[in-house]
Image 1 (spheres, rainbow, N blue to C red):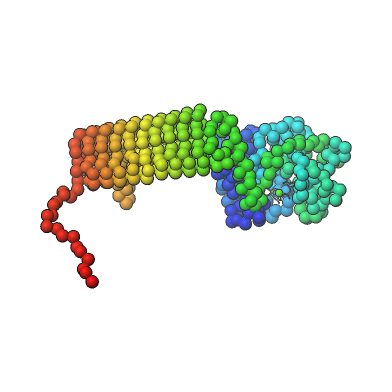
Image 2 (image 1 turned 45 degrees about the vertical axis):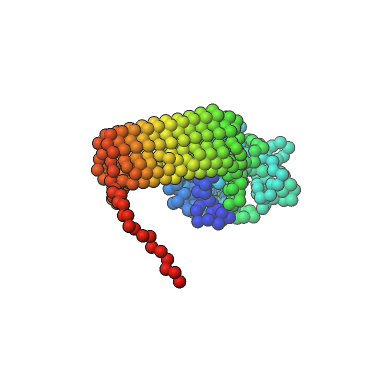
Length: 458
Ligand code: UD1
Ligand code: CA
């Protein structure tokens, strides 16, 4: 269910598209659903339907055997009415697991247990005990047997004292669901079609109702406001930090780490405070990440050190940093930066779509874009590849053991042959043969009788 408005988010963006750990809330839910290997995933949309549908089309992965289907609910007349819209897309011989698009942290194992408890024939409800059950539907039992779910607004004082609540998640045989939803009415405090009313119908029809009670509130916590979103984000990040530390990763402070995607770490990795990892990042054995780094879609090989304040973003092309390389502080590696072993990239150096072979160094204030840089090249402070002519990008090729002095401009397309030297301050527009010294700048002149201007005396 993803049709609700999410008024309390006070946002133009539909609630289920707000991000938790770098992914839309709804993406978390669809991902969890997909790990159950379902026959079919139906997303019920309403508010912001076109936006939600466009976004969710991308939530299936390569291994998924289903596509995402949509059912529009307009207007939104309650959760029972929402599920009614999906009925035409559900086969009668299946079990339907009903989830909310704004409850992102349910674990697939919990859902598997819920489905197992329902055994393909019962109505299985995911429930939990809360110290403060206000607002939730209460599980009304007669002895042990579940009799009904009563919504908070419809509950008597006696029922409101019940602390076992309905999580919003159930597993129900599709054929039963179809019959029961056909009998719903909206005679209740909110004049809504309540999905939860099917519980008393099951009881009346003699279909067993079972509650699968869990104790982890996080798994059923919904997002209704920015505060709740931030709370869930912190809880989720805490879980990820704990799991990394259990694998042996040393975190300077587990409360100051954000993983928005997947972070794979080898042995003896250490991460200082305030680092953000996005997309797919892998850190090889012994990698050290300094404070305040943002690293996205990158592979950092064993022994590399990323000094503080470094920004790495591989986007679609990726970034790879070779073993033993030293990056930063204040370095920027952009998509397609591929660095070999023992490469040094220093402060205020930007590398984009460039390959640097083993032992190449660019230590200060430089730009390498669309370049192929050979082994052991030393690329001087302030030097840049002029890779863009205003319309097209061109390549710069720098051979092995080239020494580029400071403040050079290499106007691409250009090739500097192996072993060559480029004099500081040169602007090169032509290829340089291997081994030569290229100098392209005004010659130094000496003006002997030069007097510096002096301030006139008042
Ligand atoms: C629902 C349950 C309640 C349970 C609680 C758990 C009902 C009647 N009540 O209450 O027993 O304790 O969840 O959080 O089901 N939605 C639609 N279309 C609609 C209405 C809702 O798609 O017409 C979606 C919402 O976007 C949301 C989900 O359904 O994702 C739940 O709706 P919400 O209004 O939050 O239900 P509650 O009143 O909280
Ligand atoms: Ca709710």
